[in-house]
Image 1: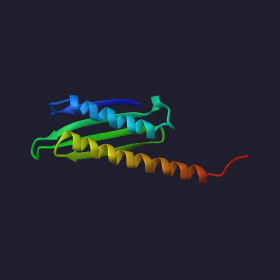
Image 2: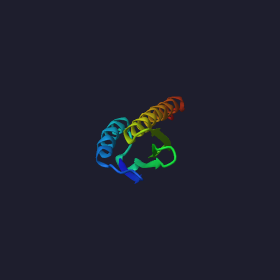
Image 3: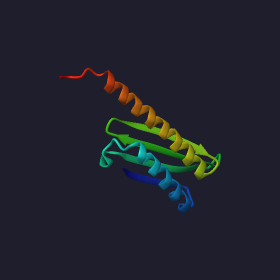
Image 4: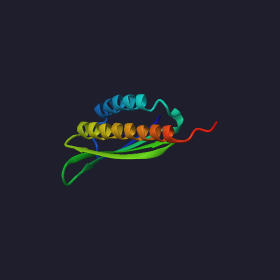
Length: 109
């Protein structure tokens, strides 16, 4: 999986990198059925100056579709956790729909 993360108004990158590494490893386990070169994860951390909230927007590009999520929280870690948990649930839902469609499709003999 190719990963690209951008930071807008986020000061500390070190603990964020460790958190991202942990979540991407977990996500890689869910995406074993896809070719690694075809999977791309784009993310952007941003800080809302008015409310002081941190947010993380993630876009996961798969050969079968693109998934978009956004996580917000009081700090970078909570926004990261929320975004990745939502993305994991969307990936599971996407894969279950693919599986059901493959089962229902008529088989050619």
